[in-house]
Length: 160
Image (tube, rainbow, N blue to C red):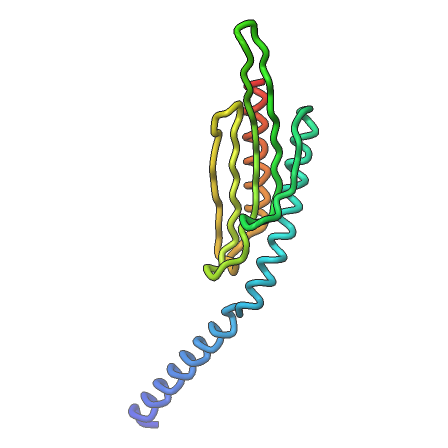
């Protein structure tokens, strides 16, 4: 075989490999319905984890009330407590709250976890963690939920 023929065959093989690679990438890209299904699956699992963690926190400190969050912000849970401090000079009140929720599905195709915490009328944190739906690692999200809840508990226990 002449070099010219081998050159043409090499070009054809390279082009076929390129077409195959592009087709494989297209097949790998998730459709909108698949992304919605993935978001719903992750949301369900993580919102259950949130409710479980926050429920356990509320059980450790009498006076906390827990509530589920299911609204336009997303799905999750919150615990809160109002305290009244009576003193000779008068009374003061304070609140403590921890809420975590998963945002609804959006066209940006991300899974977003948000947490807000306040202890005795002072904001402790206001955080968000997000990843593209195709790249979500549920273990990192569950660890984040646990860590944020534990941080709140540690700070609350130190102030009460």
